[in-house]
Length: 121
Image (tube, rainbow, N blue to C red):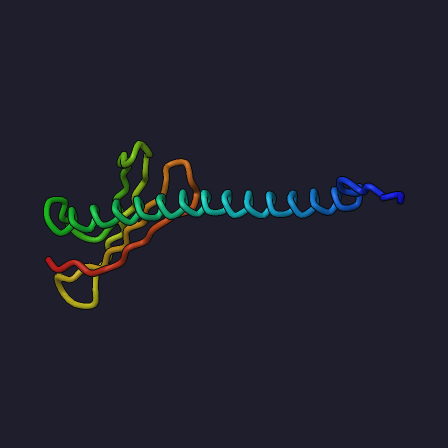
């Protein structure tokens, strides 16, 4: 009796296994990289919102605007330089002003956060 000993995998089976493995590794890498990018973007938006909220608190308490106009400045938060811009205009009634606060990274061209509201004098 002759027995055929067929041990191991054929070349086609190995090629298909490598194709499946490489496809899954690429998919996992893309998920990880897009999650990392999203995390950094969310962190930037969160910091920009906090800077905007700080500016709102300041214009309501310590740094009250004298009237309509535009003010700009920069602040360091989380080791990053941020630029802010406030636009204050007359509101719908006397002694009410409308404000708009824009926040962006100093190195960026687009604003990440905008806050709008009213200020009563």
